[in-house]
Image 1 (tube, rainbow, N blue to C red):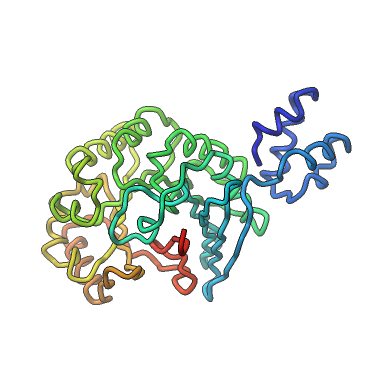
Image 2 (cartoon, one colour; image 1 turned 60 degrees about the vertical axis):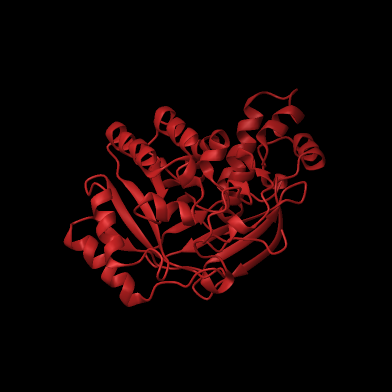
Length: 325
């Protein structure tokens, strides 16, 4: 739903008409015909000139665990994917993409193997969430799909600020970054809403991190963690650390001890992520993950092990990619 285009088409109508269109779309309407408080002439004009969604649904798959993955194309045919995760406690969380592809080429991430196409607009980001809202109510959104959100900071924040209209509060919105410093600094400086921050860390030292995440050569750990600490000082909110467990790469007890030395236990909470293989690495064994976590627990560094969702449909963390894209 491109409200900018809606506003252009309805320029002769009262300004509140655009607000009415958005309210219907945000509540889960799937056609202009459902917007019964708009004049029939206005609905017909919108139907003719403004596609209801900025994205075209190409394919949708459902996992055995209830996770749903949707493949969309932009108007030019650029691919992107989004995921609806259903949890037993009733949570419905949507993982949205901020870019088609990704230019940062983290070696363990399938998206990094795709061709980067472009940043997504705020409306294209929102349409991913609204697609699933039309299936069922959603209450969490995570910017952890394709792309680096801090490379598209303006559109990401614009989209996040409209999510409450869909029923997703800022406290239930999480933006993840690999540590793209210019965007992260702007996020810390400019965003007053209590949106959660997550850092894709994946290694406790610069040399190892640079070997699997080239972005670290440009923005090393010291600088990135300094911005995370500033976020905590300004907001009083913990930073979530994502740490994918790669067998024989970053999963030893020694790596865990380095992580303890690196992170302030009052500021950071670590989310250990079982690796979903994309061809280059093997995932750590359950016993290895448990041993790693025991080191963090002994040091009282808060940590959890992420529940893997949608692996059978390549919808799990790090798996989002479009073949031959």
